[in-house]
Image (tube, rainbow, N blue to C red; front, side, top):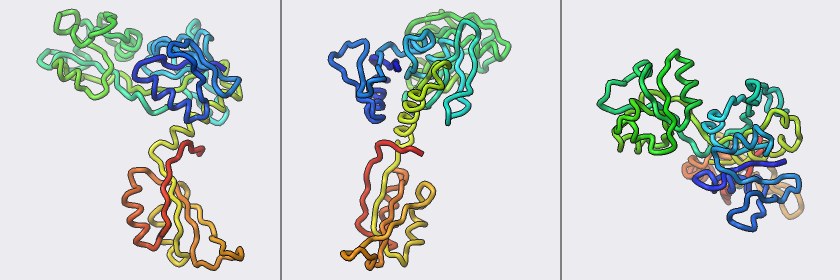
Length: 308
């Protein structure tokens, strides 16, 4: 099983961290390796440009790929897996362009592909672009966006400095990636419409969906994503105030409650051990509330993976 991952750029380090947390330690021996083995003898990692990864997967050089949804859509059709339990059921493609199956939203690399135009210009609506010129690094996604609205602008493909094109009269508007909007503001460009919301995903070819290793890898990645922003709380609490403790930490499906055994093996302490998973953002206030209802010996730990 071969997984193509970004070889550099802002997506490289988060992807390598994801692999590590998922239990697929990559055994790298040099900085510019084109491929590397993992601790799983059946899984190999290929390093490629993020924009090329969809082609690696479509053409069979890799079975799975980690890259942005924007890059995947630019390279061809993308479909969602309709049955997460079996990773099967997704079917798509358009003849010579097999579809990629979007298996897992990995949650990082979030950005938007937007239509933007000069702030003081005469383009204030998507329809205003009809018959005009639009510059972009994503011609296929851009063309599909306008065709779905019955519009026919002239699409000019550029390979960088897209924001400059309206100011040098190369284009009337642009379709470009933005994360915070700062670059657009600096270049006096206003967002007219959102073309695509993107994040990094795990993609697969349709013909490998039934492979147990695909399910294993997807589940491992999902468990890392599910653990993001969660903390594991353990504490002792008076049995008499257990319901109050439960009100403070409902947890995922309710907290786990266990008896505390004394030296003779019997529960004589009048307390129980309570374990729960809570949102990281709530930990500060939850600990205060737990102390107020009699909880003690509270321990907070990070969660590496969470299989739901």
